[in-house]
Length: 64
Image 1 (cartoon, rainbow, N blue to C red):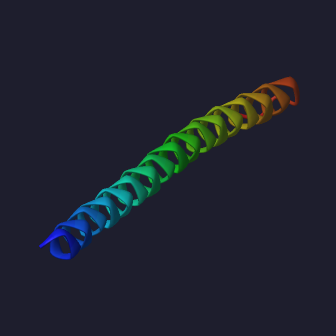
Image 2 (cartoon, rainbow, N blue to C red):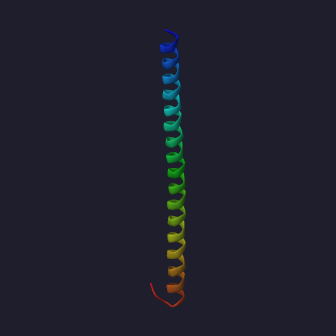
Image 3 (tube, helix red, strand yellow):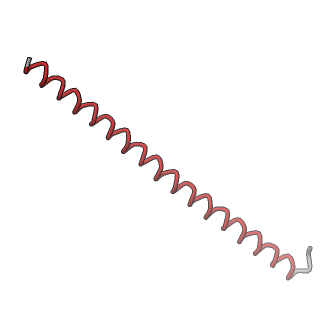
């Protein structure tokens, strides 16, 4: 009886370890998603700044 109980407890521990690994993996994916969003926002700002610079350059040369 105690052998079955020990096995059941160890199985519960393994399930908890697997669930913690899943949570850790999900957190890493969320963190990567946040970094990707920040990268996209930075790229958008850079594109807008580049456009503004070209517009000013064109205006300086009398282009529309």
